[in-house]
Image 1 (spheres, one colour):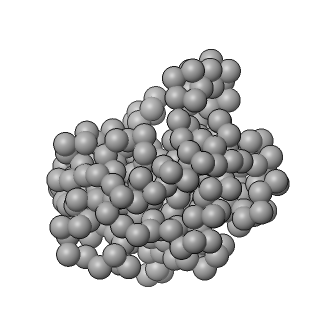
Image 2 (image 1 turned 90 degrees about the horizontal axis):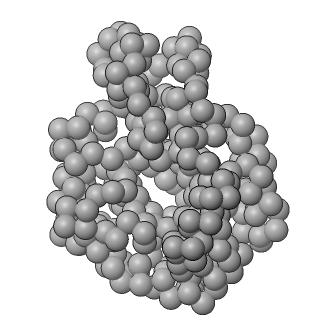
Amino acid sequence: METNKLTLSNGVEMPLLGYGVFLVPPQEAERCVSDALSVGYRLIDTAQAYANEEGVGEAIAKSGIRREDLFLVTKVWISNAGESRAAESIDESLRKLKTDYVDLLLIHQAYGDVFGSWRAIEKAYKAGKVRAIGVSNFQAGRFFDFAHYVDVKPMVNQLQCNVMIQQNGIQPLLAETDTKMMAWGPLGGQGVDGIVKSEVLAAIGSKHGKSAAQVALRWLTQRGIVAIPKSSHKERMAQNFQIFDFQLTDEEMALIATLNQHDTGTVNFQDPQFVKYLISNYG
């Protein structure tokens, strides 16, 4: 069976499967991350906007797992956009996470002074506070514009991606800069329903002794897309983690590809009203 990691453009190895803490309440974060680490997850994805970095940091500190064996991801929120504010926020995130560095730092939204934020992120990268850098929710045109003008190209773009939102259109652009895709909402969420109830996925799963959810996650990771499913239930975390002991056939991969419904996602990050909401509330 192939490795459960991929290699970023700068040579850093990143797990293909991680645990996401979006919408995990701050008071639950430590328990959830501790459970995820005990199951075997080593990639933890958080963000300044989630307000749970401290809980993540507590869980990691108490886990007894060597820091070098973990892959920690966080994101600079739009309220911290701009070089000086982003720089301060990076140090604050490190303090909350109880670590000297994060493995991957992303710009969370494609608005505000993203170029200023990127300068701060590049400096943090060169200073050893960050091992890899990237963006999140940058749609195709915005990504091309951004990547064209920055010195260090984004190593990751985290997007809404799953079997029903396959993000095929942006992949040639990402390939031009050797930018890997990371999937939030890999099992649905944000206007997507039916993945875990899919008859197609269930039928494929039955051949491998796996659930529809496990097939959906395997489809992503087999394509080299990092998946970060979230669950507050330890048994579900464990099930989601058991996806590297089987392989989907070419025919199964092709059949799953026909499930695509919203190629670029159910959240329109380029909608002027959405952008106005972001900037008015957080800019």
